[in-house]
Length: 236
Ligand code: SAH
Image 1: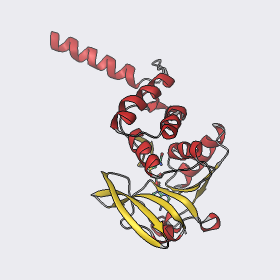
Image 2 (image 1 turned 90 degrees about the horizontal axis):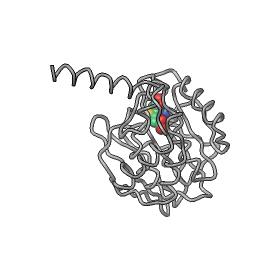
Image 3 (image 1 turned 30 degrees about the vertical axis):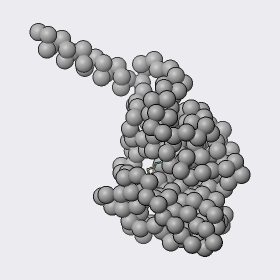
Image 4 (image 1 turned 90 degrees about the vertical axis):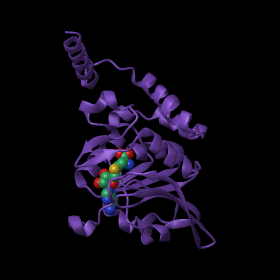
């Protein structure tokens, strides 16, 4: 009997947690997320912590996952893609050493969440998404939320966005097997690229360019969706 009660209770909790009508104080959930998942794991930049507290992550996830938006993990955004774990977004953003005057290129717009976090911290964000429906919905979402300094285009991130190069920072949120040469070429001297590299086993790299020389540092083992090639999707 006790077992039945606990199963029923457990189911009730699961249903109410997943239900979009369950009342959640999103601002409080966000503050809690920053405290327990991000600063507790060592992210120190006040600017990054503030951006993570300010961007309404629940508006970047599908409505059925809204109440899980501040949980400690990635979530599906459809099209077999994910919005990254909040800690990883904060960690990568801090690692990029961003300044308010920076021009940033992002590869893999997805939901547009990382784009929005970046846009709080820099002057201008250019973001490329290879899947048309995601590029379109992220662009609309960012516009709706009043994000005025970010632009999204549908295209192949392996080529970068040469029209606006060079960039102070490049943030790659899908994993290529090797660091893409075009992106290195579009990085400003003194610039930083944060990129997960590998197929099954991946590492997050911090790539810096100084006096034309490239320096690579491994930061963390990670797991990102693969960075696909435009030719595989017939996007050129
Ligand atoms: N930064 C995103 C996470 C996106 S997941 C967020 O905050 O929600 C990675 C995204 O990279 C996916 O949307 C995927 O479609 C996209 N992607 C994969 N290969 C790509 C490529 N070659 N160029 C641009 N985007 C790519």
